[in-house]
Amino acid sequence: MSSARVCLPLLAVFAVAVSTSAQDQVVLKRGRLAGKITIAGTIEEFTGEDIQIRSSQGETLRTYPAADVIAVVTPHTEAHDRGLALLREGREGRVEDAIVALETALKKEPRAWVRREILASLVQSELRRGDIPKAGTRFLALLRSDPTTRHFRVIPLAWMSEPLTATARSQAQSWLNGSVEAGKLMGASLLLDDPNLSSAAQSVLRGLATSPDRRIQSLAQTQGWRLEAAQGTVGELEVARWQARIDELPGDLRAGPCYVLGRAYAARHDYELAAATLLWLPLVDDHDFRLTARACLEAGIALERIGQQSEAHGLYREATRRFPETPSADEARGLLETATEREPSPKKEVAP
Image 1 (cartoon, rainbow, N blue to C red):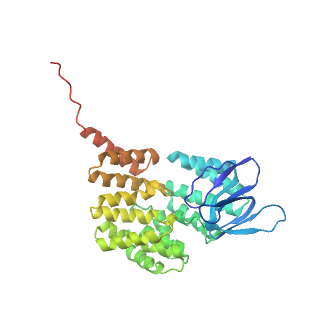
Image 2: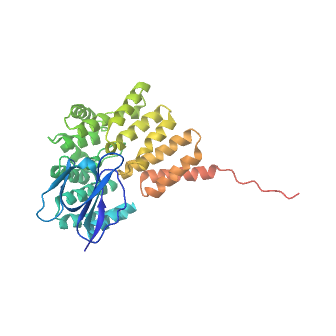
Image 3: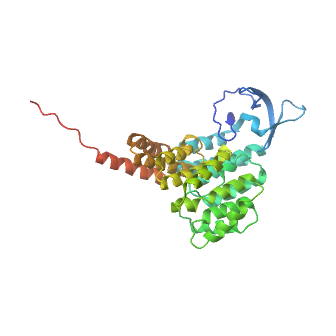
């Protein structure tokens, strides 16, 4: 049993009504002034470069640039739909069930391009439960299937300091010393804060910053900002340069760099800019569950520093609602409780 669902490129989120037929539907940009067309048929392939669709049996395969795709509607297996629904719930216990459902869908799905969609969801699922080795292994499988993948943004990188398990540290070292650039980037990112391996990680990032792959190059460069942002030593000209660099990035690669830039603004006491930059994650790109929770919390803290308590408390509540069972949600609850305790008790009126 299957149902039709929307598989969407990059950051687009739409609800598209479809018939019960098994045909795929592709909505493409056409011309200027937001023109678009819809093509029905069978998608034979969908990569980061193009989409190939055959309108009917025996008809010539037509190819369109992936950048022109607005939305894709295609049938999903029941397991695939269930996995996505469980993942959207955001509760830790549901993530385990989501992984089971998505793994079942991966085995049943015959279409290579849809299997890549499932792999991207599995990477996010593993990241949500904090299993970096599995997330990275699945991402590399996705990349082998399509080196131009539209899902490069899910690459497991560390943008905030979190302790690594012994298994994750060992796997990160293996990736760091490997020959695959994406693996080296993951390894360097995870080990950047390691007191014994930070120098090696920084050296690898410097090498990757000149990679011919613009995605690797951009992320390696922005990963290199993390130590400066943490030390609070970034000057005005430097943060301006970082902002300009982020503005050049594709929208789907901005989440992590925006988090680092937001922290740099906060370290400089530019709290309004810090909040505005950090809010890119919860407002525009929340694919990294834990990082987005942290950005939401820190945006609230920044606003509270400039006296915007109401807005700050709204963000704390948002963190607890959207990102339950994360350390950031726990911290947000604590801040809300402290704020409640500080509120003065209402004065009682005394009758004359």
